[in-house]
Image (cartoon, rainbow, N blue to C red; front, top):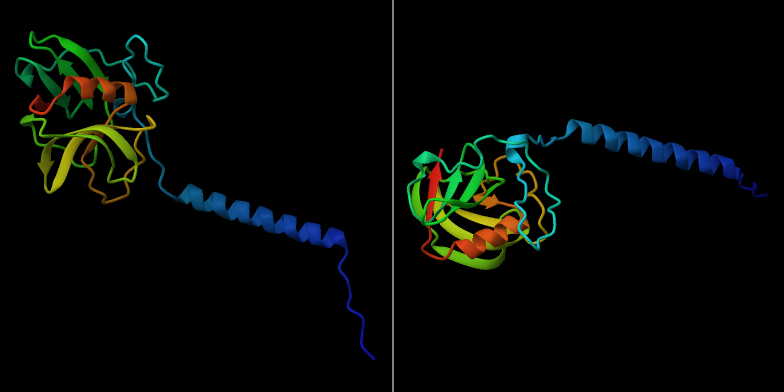
Length: 195
């Protein structure tokens, strides 16, 4: 004679599923707390320099830098793009040495060597080495086999933190600043990289 199967009450099933879900959340939380945590500093967070007709940027704003508006003295003369490695900042400088615009940028993991360059290639839009759709790409140097270029994400976002050991040469900026740089810098425009 067969023995009838015992059935678990519904409260036992609900309790078991709830305990399993809580255990999963706890395990994922512990795993996330032990993973890498990007650290943002005021020097690495650009702000959009708004011009008439542009929408405010959703990019984080850096703390005020007293000398940020001054074009570095060691950047040469004439119409040029100046990029400061130490300040993570770009200036668009007119022929009369007046800064037309300045803004903070997110540097890649590979820096260009201090010196003078020219914009060699411009691309409307490509996919960055980090997989992000970028636009207004202006190449001006290569260091250790890594191309160095200015660009902005199509969606205006900041770049994701680079994976350990990843070599990237993209110098990213907020979308409004990328549009301004694209309008300013044609092929052959001088780029001066300073400390």
